[in-house]
Image (cartoon, rainbow, N blue to C red; front, side, top):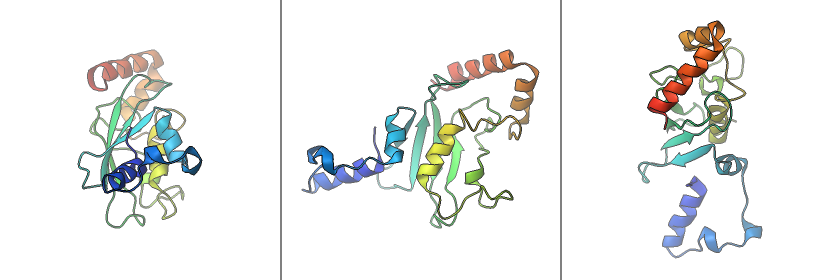
Length: 175
């Protein structure tokens, strides 16, 4: 697994600095982000190591409807970050009430302007975005305020058939 901190340390090591592997355990700090990523449900990938503002996040839920799937998100951090939120799109076709089949995401912290005050704020971080995307598969899964109305209504009508369609999408698109 590659984290930004470990990548930077490894790159410094290639330039002659001390590498992360040689640092004593007592000097390494583990952030909440790294704990979440280490949990195994989220992994970060930088398709172009020269563009650290563009990365992919893979979420592999370990519980709930989406357990067993691998869902790719493309994240672009704009020049105006942290005054504006990063742009995030789901690259994996998914049957989800808060993510459209074309990849748009309904997650309040990704909104630049929010009526309820839960949208983006300069105090938010990329760690919050990773947590939010991961939580869309568990505690933030919201059938009451859907972006994909058809998926939410499907769940309301027939939970077992909804689960079956989610499983079908996982087998076809999220392996």
